[in-house]
Length: 283
Image (cartoon, rainbow, N blue to C red; front, side, top):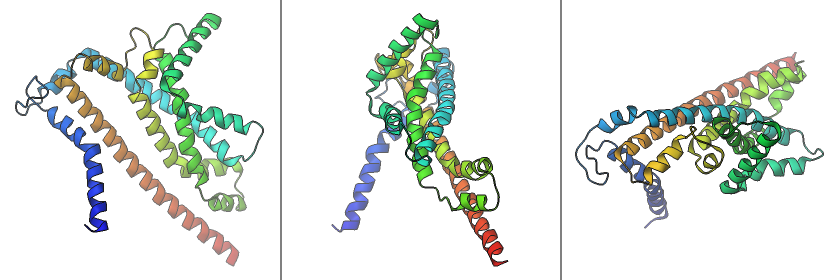
């Protein structure tokens, strides 16, 4: 077997290993039979059952709210942290700051969840906030670990930026805040968007940490799915998983399209800036 054919075979084997279970799950979400492993014909009745289940709808709504809020705050905190680490060079406390920022990346989720639970209990005893465990504590916990992932994404994006466009803008008289707002932030937008999507997905997927810091009446979607699966997989769970796959795939495609447009617009701006600078040098 030639090397090219072998690599192609390995590629398709890898794709099959990753995506074949998802395809099987999607197909069986349209199974008419109540038995998950027995095919009973095509049907969409389990999607109807899913949308008539108030428990699932409530958990999904709560998970989406938590994911959106925590991802947005994590982008602000992680974005600033990544920018500082990439652009400010050596400063006092940089090593400790970088270590504390990356600690959630390698810390076991059980340890993170337990430590946050103890923190919330201590804060409630000392200052009376947060009063109990619920949606607020889950949001704070998700921001804690999601900001670290966003900082890594933004830091790598900032390190890969071409500073020639920023320097050209400052040579033309732009103030630093103007350069940051009109040059740097648009160039960082693909990284910020990627960080937001990563934080949103991590929050939507989290089970372990949310189980530690949540309380009665604040059940997230992963917790609900886990409790249902422990009693046996039902067809409505397949339908729910299919909808989640569809939402995530749509988000990835949309973000890819937005980042592609941003990259093309940035390339046009760079070419226009260098043309203007060249014209000024010629005059």
